[in-house]
Length: 406
Image (cartoon, rainbow, N blue to C red; front, side, top):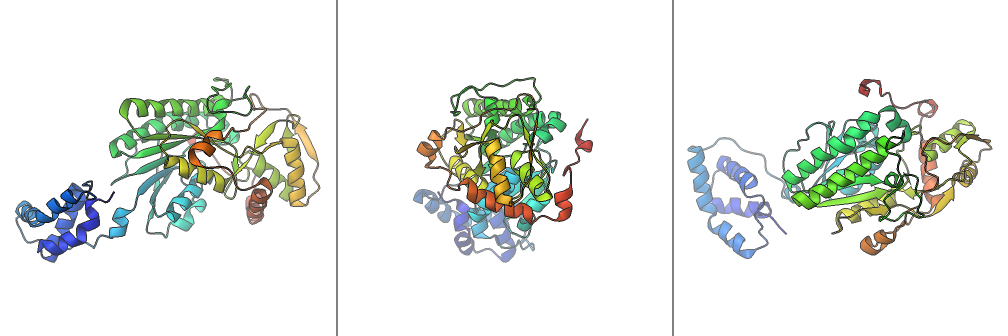
């Protein structure tokens, strides 16, 4: 589908206006007929035939020969799809910004930086088609102009984070999601929300299919994250069924890669950081619990395909290659060429013992499956962590949440 702005240069040539009124004319086109579908030849014929009439109408409205000359409007810019990505300065959000910029989108990043880091997206600031808003989405969200897509990836995602800021975690999954769904409704934008494998809790079904309802302790320490995501799915489907909002839901399984925070408590950065610093590797429990790790590029590809699909129910995106944490620790020692001991600590409450996605739906609906094997992805990730400064490697904690706790 092409819209009226695609032909604006032709209309301006036909309008016979001086430069000042041509600028007003262009502004009138953008503000009043942005959504005219000009793929239909009748619409095109009508608009061109009435071009001078519209010009005269503008003259009458302004009743003067304008001396204001508006800057020329980039036709390519106006044709670009515009996408809002929340959590843009986070690990996964920043990679999504990169992907959509590469695909030719105008990307609007939004983040309150409670867990995100501007370093993840600073390379985008020089780009014409990237803009950033430092904003908390639990408050009213306003984005000027047209909006085609929204990716909701704002949320603390590691246990250390959401145990320290439980109220904020619940609010971003509830109030934040509500605000963004309202924005999607007003803008007539398609919205994809980032759910998680944590909706399955400590699963009694293995591997986990999308039809499994989960085994979650609603009042346990992990409940603030698990239930925030489960509510997020519920309100998203409610907006879809009641308001007709175009929605998509991705259930993300363990994902890794460059830009992960070194000390966020998740097993990959924890193990690699300990190995680089020469510390013992810490395993919680007996090490026989399993995880399935998906490289970030594969995850982003799955999200991209789901956003552009016609499927509205949740879809698992993750790598089904399962490994025990004990065996994974041995892989890290081999990868890093170090010789640390492995020490064991009690398993945290409600920590899942198994995590493996059933990705049948992703394969059948999206033609997607993970391509990057763990050895390849871990080598890239290890090289990234090795590139960090000694100061970054030695930090015990990378985030101070004191000002957010109330």
